[in-house]
Amino acid sequence: MNIIIAGDGEVGFHLAKMLSNNDHNITIVDPDQELIKMVESQSEALAITGDSTSIEVLEQAKVKKADLMISVLHDERINIVTSVLAKKLGAKRCIARITNPEYLTPHNKQIFKALGIDAIVSPESLAAKEIGKLLRNPAATEIFDFSEGLLSLFLLKLDSKALILNKTLDNIAAENEHLDFRAIAIHRDSKTIIPRGNDQFLENDMTYIITKPEGINEMLRLGGKDDLHINTVMIAGGGRIGKLTALLIEKEMAVKLIDNSLERCNKLAAILTNTMIIHGDIRNLNLLEEEGIKQTDAFVAVTEQSETNILSCLLAKKYGIKRTIALVENIDYIDVSQRMGIDTIINKKLIAASYISRFTLRANVASIKCLHGVDAEVLEFIVKSDAWMAGKQIKDMEFPAGAIIGGIVRGQESFIALGNLVIHEGDKLVVFAIPSVIKKVEKIFSK
Image 1 (cartoon, one colour):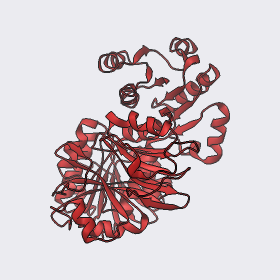
Image 2: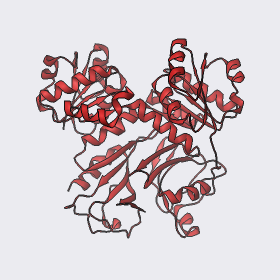
Image 3: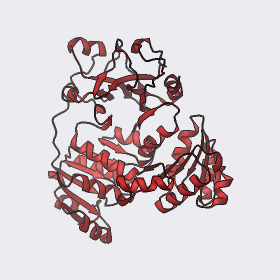
């Protein structure tokens, strides 16, 4: 696939690196010459220094032959103009990064579609929704729903209270006659394991689990997770993610939002009617204690500085906070941040990549989740009417070693993937896969 990426920072750079590893022809357009040099040295993408709203630059990038145009600059106005021009100049499909909530309503999305923008991605909005979901399900480190919650992916960190420690999958299956969930991956010592029957669960394992809604409570019980409830939340940072998170949860939870910009605090006070807005520096320990951090259930750090978010979450842990969530933009920090004790890491680049990746696959994909802290993805493939696998049992499918089927959605029903389960036309199969085998899995569903 011929893909053009217009960016002005790390989101575009990350997408270029990720997609160039999947046999796509990538051209990246960026106004920053230094970043362009970095792209050229670290990926096989063709790099062009220039303004993506320039017709001359787009033609230089061969926009007429583009299967996909992705515009992810920080300025959404540039993304809109870039996408509209690219579509008029021949690009088959255009995706624009847009963060203004006014533009994200269903009605306004249709207006953009009429202009030639096929899809809108808002990493900040997606990040806020993910944080809201985690605060409502505080036992999990990461959550992602497939088919509107008919199946869900949970990430649990196993501590000493987990009832499955030192047990194998076969042991757990023998002790529990019917389970509505399945472990699909274990992240241990920076390595990802796809568990088989004789693999054991160990303390500190990061375990990825596919579950039906009715299996969540039993999954949490076996994982040793307390029935936590978040009533009070402190948010550090009043930028777009902090503001959107507060808007999502302020009617369910008592929210305090701290930001060091007086101008921003005044604007937030006019928008957030049920949130206490505090002007101050999150690094000020006296301020945190005065605002009751010791009595707070959850701490969310989403300032523009990853280091500040990491350190403030570690500090919150010292105060006994039950749940910490940090926005970490440097992907290299994610694994070490989790090992340091932060409950959940949010990364906008991975969130944007999750949304955009499905547009680059030949197979029919309903959704993709790029996982935080582990080099793997979970994809929801739709079985086509003429697919060779329709009518066959799961055990008859020859899957590569780095991939596993976790569950199936059929209409309004969901099933945990067992070997004798028959695949039907139209089924949605949730598949966990490491990067090196994603293309092989895609080919299986493209046949």
